[in-house]
Image 1 (cartoon, rainbow, N blue to C red):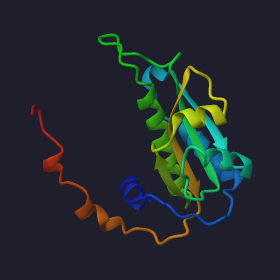
Image 2 (image 1 turned 45 degrees about the vertical axis):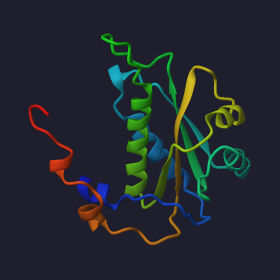
Image 3 (image 1 turned 120 degrees about the vertical axis):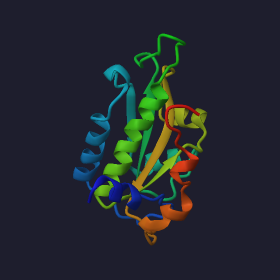
Image 4 (image 1 turned 30 degrees about the horizontal axis):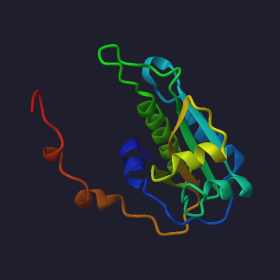
Length: 172
């Protein structure tokens, strides 16, 4: 499958089979995140893998992972992230998002479903998983075997804006 086919195949999954994600697939997903590009190669991502029932129960106190048997809390370490010198913009959250995207697409290529979750209580997540103050929980990636029908890859024809609505050449 080429990249565009993979990107069009990926869809948000909010219902999962109870089947566990195999260790070898988890390691491939984590490797995809490890090799993701980050600003100045600072690699500020810190990932908490949640796959035991106890951890998933703790996670449910601050986030809905829709019954996924595996969740990754992707954090950004602000103490090592690159900052743009002109205005000090800290790109840790951007780096964490690039890492998440790589892992999400890798999971799709492995036949797994995912849900990118930003709707969560960061205070609860921080407390439940002992996340240090210099780390920011940026997003959560729920992963598992979908228990729903896949969406059509052709859905983007009508669900996405045309390029003319999102792209300008040379100037606005």
